[in-house]
Length: 271
Image (cartoon, rainbow, N blue to C red; front, side, top):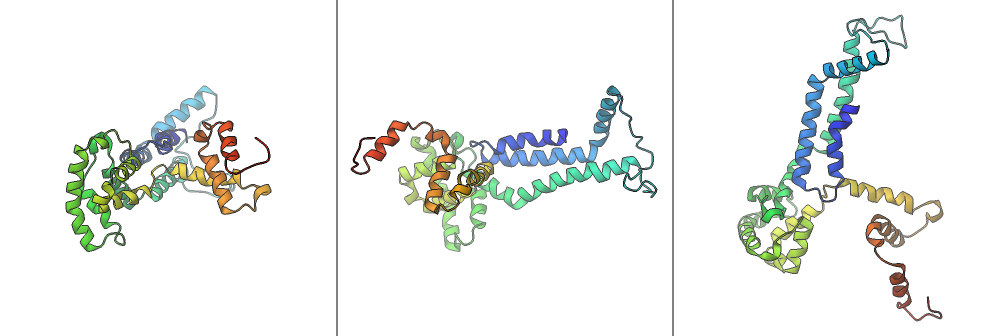
């Protein structure tokens, strides 16, 4: 388990970073799957050497791999398999298969392809990741949002869009798709390129940092307790917002909150 968690640790830490871009996340998923698969095929012997060395250092008896495996639940019944077969097939391969299958379920080929296409919208390094073909494929994945005529129009709109934003200095030093969407609204380019802006909005609906989304749901356990189990949706949303974005709310002083509350309406006393 130490080696397996070592393989997946880099991916777990990367997915929890808020500044993680889509392209790097997809590459990390691929490399993690490959490392686990290679370890499954060729890693048991090296693992066995480490376990044997640990047992020798601490005077622990080492099981002979070529002896017949004895089931501790029924010692009289023959298993007709060796210890090596038991530890490789029933333990080593089983655990690794569970890890590989879970990564495959969470990051399927379709999902990975979708994320790779979305990465072409990244404005970093003067739109270095822009790929017209991938963005057209992204539009194909949303048949209800782009009809046939709009897909045909998108081919030409993408060409005008990338040429315009690369020359516009207002689009320099953007960090992500969310910054790009905000800057397009500020410069009113969302009106000039409505189909491209629609792709950007669709990409913002699929955040890579799923850990942030999971933390948002887990925060409700701390907010909606047994003593506050009848709160309305509006009040619960406000409480969850304060809990999730507590890093920003810590920068707000209590005096500012009191002053805002005081000026909302006329009160009998001064807070």
